[in-house]
Length: 173
Image (cartoon, rainbow, N blue to C red):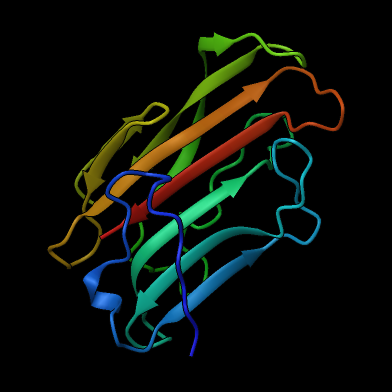
């Protein structure tokens, strides 16, 4: 028996779906033993996915990712929990970061530019800014995914070992 919990104050309305109460779950943890957070703190778990159903054909209920990984060109990489990767047909929305330089804040290590998150479902593609939310449908289930893009940013340059990118996103049915 395992107990999963999180601080619900982090994102208003965030919850585990009722479908996970009292049933066997598949819990995927995306491990990055050398990954670091935005202030160079250890971040060994960069994503989590919770599913019901048979392991060969899971039905996902909850997704969360936070990470500082960048692509080769230095732009933020896509959130690890928001892409099919076991069977290739998971019923999850697919997300990717779209770099923007429209909104920014000054910072000691260079300007921090707030990026957009593109989230694709079967019915639409959402473009979410920091703190924005929306819903998308994926697969045959009638319940849509509630998606919250907490934040994504990048900066040109690094200092004191701080990250050049950062992404946080969560979704639940």
